[in-house]
Length: 338
Image 1 (tube, rainbow, N blue to C red):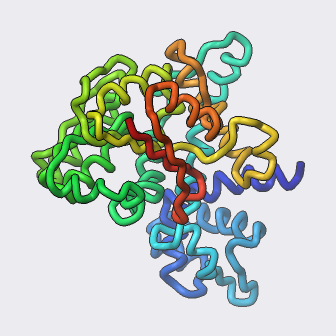
Image 2: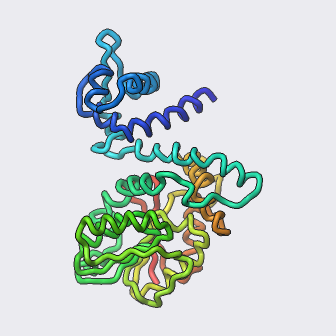
């Protein structure tokens, strides 16, 4: 229990270290005093010093007492900075984001129901940042190539839809990379769609559109060549209907690419999953409850590969492949064909 308390507290401090860019600052200098670090980060020294205390005693930051200097070793900076191999501090932000709705979740434990999307301050901001690592960083050169023919088709010009597009970064990146194709993004969050449109305007794109849309109720019969959904299906109110809509909206030779949480539908098979407690917590405090808030199925983040594959087949997909990529230990990539 002491270890759990310490690490729970550390999750908050890691989130603060990311948001204040303290990790990035420390990675850019050698050993430095708290005064030097706070000055370079343009932050209050007293708060920086107390934050450093948490990081030193957790053995993340190294401390030299005689010189009163602090340093962040490169092998640790690789997983805590924006320029590192994979920034786990980005993911740590979900801890304070989820904690904000604890009282509302407690009410759901007593009375049922759910907590709606609009209750989550900074969720879209954090999710977009997380997706930058798991989706954007590898989308063009790593994720799309798992579908052998898709890059050639995108260059020639096809119609693409991203379901649950959030802040639209994936759509905007693909629209910029493949100017001959047209891209549409659907999401029921007005905040997400606003963010997507603003980025589209900044990039000067004319081959992308975004629409606030409940994807439970769309049907464009055989209209799209390629449909994507990045970490978006499991928290839908009615994921079965969404998958059926996606299937109907694809042309006969169309392809659906779904990124979703890597895990099993059976609890006992997740016992060795390195992120299982975190993912079940995120599911309870967000994914499941936002679905239940819409009188949905409350599928949850840990619906698992078995259930996901079953639902894809039930929606009418005749062939489903499940892949995992080296850059993303958290997700599976499902390639479903009509």
